[in-house]
Image 1 (tube, rainbow, N blue to C red):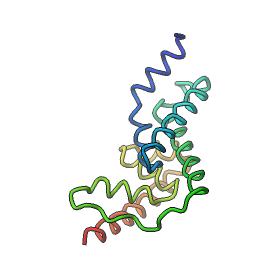
Image 2 (spheres, helix red, strand yellow):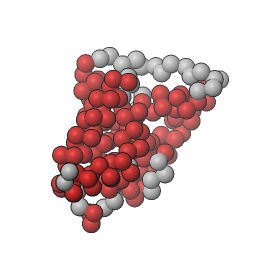
Image 3 (cartoon, one colour):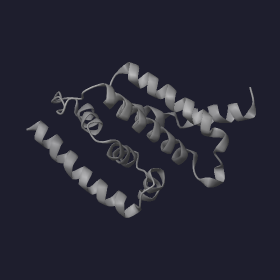
Length: 157
């Protein structure tokens, strides 16, 4: 196995949670999640020769690629199926799944913002990953937190 392949596998293993989180947000079924995870890994491998440590953290680079693949996947899926407008009411003991269901109902950029926010990424890193300003990150996140809070408290009533 080459040094490049070994380094890639090591980094992918260290940051594999990123792929899992993106997959959970952008894919609905277990089959879709497996397919999306494989597509993300493939795109990461294809882009890896162009990754340079001096250009930024591996996790930021990985998020950027994983989110782009997730958003592309979402666009493809939406062209082939009609999605429900409503999100099923959560079970009383399943608040985390209810949150994920609400996040999955957001558009691609908003999903990415919430995911990175839940990962405790700084506004600067979120802005870097998504290619928007820190001020835009702050504004969008404030609105999204309010909207999600209202939806979740409304669903619990």
